[in-house]
Length: 294
Image 1 (spheres, rainbow, N blue to C red):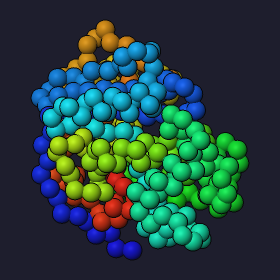
Image 2 (cartoon, helix red, strand yellow; image 1 turned 90 degrees about the vertical axis):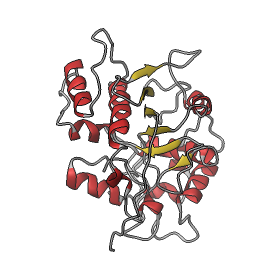
Image 3 (cartoon, helix red, strand yellow; image 1 turned 180 degrees about the vertical axis):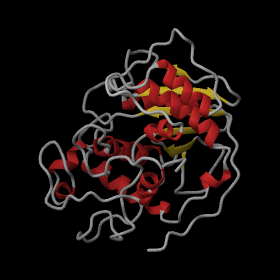
Image 4 (spheres, helix red, strand yellow; image 1 turned 30 degrees about the vertical axis):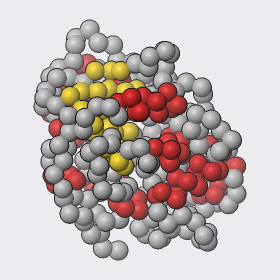
């Protein structure tokens, strides 16, 4: 199928927020990290929750309501905003009367998981017939395939691709986080402007999908197999995105160096958002979403 592109639009923002996401079932998510920077070149700063040591998805939801008061906010979160659709013309090939657009997909995922709090999404793994499409901690569904969205195909051809969206097992998997994320989007859809699904409204937060590893690779930075990104590597990546260095005394926290992912995403959003070509994405993004910067 031919990949047609949308018309580019000029965008200007004052505040840039990068969020490293987590889909785990715990009350608090140690893997969630939030970084923020303003226009200019100042290095991003890590934002901690007000009352607890760690973020939860619910407290993050409240944080978004607070930051809504800021002007022209561009905010990125690293989960898949939708599922592959282009090749099969369906999110769940072979099933009838299933969603054909992201808004209804989010609604479905939320409904399946309505008995779980904190936006957890793993209930779908026990819900037939949908469970058959996932590689989950419970079992590998008979209809599971390594399907890719167009943005993931483009990311792979250019730099690096994320794990398939229906894969919920193993290092780097995005499936569990994306399920929680789709519930998150369902409840946010009327409060923020979710790109690229509808026209941008500057009076609301502009929410985009991000991929921190892609931004590090874009900057020519590879993680060390033992300890990931040290401060020098993070600063080298920040330099690529025209940002000042971090404070030399900063400690990079998180089970998987989540602070590093949030920091680089915040700086990358500030730098990349000025490139009009990156807002010019294929029409299929209306169905599948799009990783900002690809």
